[in-house]
Length: 333
Ligand code: ATP
Image (cartoon, rainbow, N blue to C red; front, side, top):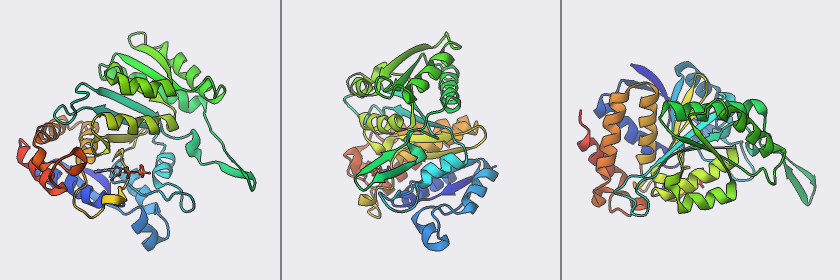
């Protein structure tokens, strides 16, 4: 039995994490949850959105499943998501983008992975004002982090039988920062002659992804471009409700959906749990529980064929509950 930290999170977070808990229970997956609170609820109770007990729990269990946590725009606390990634040194953000053929008639064969550097770039949060009318942000890129994410991307490609790595950059403009990032990826690519390597400028990459997503395999990017491209790629497979993710470090991994807390649909019973469920499939794979992972993945793939039970974001007529029940009914236990 593995103990896994569970953070329900904000907005639709509790609704979709509850679905995962119920489905894992039916699946008889060997997981026991340690539930801890972070986000808006924690601010009221503990005066901080990220109490030390949350970090301690993740460090102890080494694996966590996290619901979305609201990041206030403008004033307020620093993003919990960013702080968690930094404090636990979860340097790689892994975002597989795989189409579910029943859902998307435009692209049926998308199967790519976005690997986003997770600890620096603009997310260092270094911003300041020079005077009343001028604001600056500092973009940080280091050799250490760039080489580390490059090695992660190429190792991932090799270990998952992927054929190509595409590095995304804007080194024509950000010559020093993206220049360093690109140089590190290039150097690491030399050690992987079995993996094809190419480079794309981020604006061109955005267009190529929309026109020919099937052409891409493993995509490695600095933090900001990775954030933007993963939402774009989620759109290609049917929306944020389907896109899973994982934050991975040397010893710790935190699994979460790509989407945010979706305040516009919170409490309406229509949140799509598939992105978090697919993140849970990744969690099971990470724990080498392949058998349970396969069962859950298959049940999700088979469930989406029925429009009557799908949530409205997938143009369905159902609810979180109907989608959950369908998946449970399809689990081959
Ligand atoms: P953040 O800044 O935290 O990333 P965001 O402002 O980008 O959040 P999201 O919370 O991800 O936004 O939501 C974007 C849109 O996608 C919203 O209209 C939301 O309702 C929808 N959405 C996101 N996740 C889901 C989901 N699981 N099910 C259904 N709709 C979703």
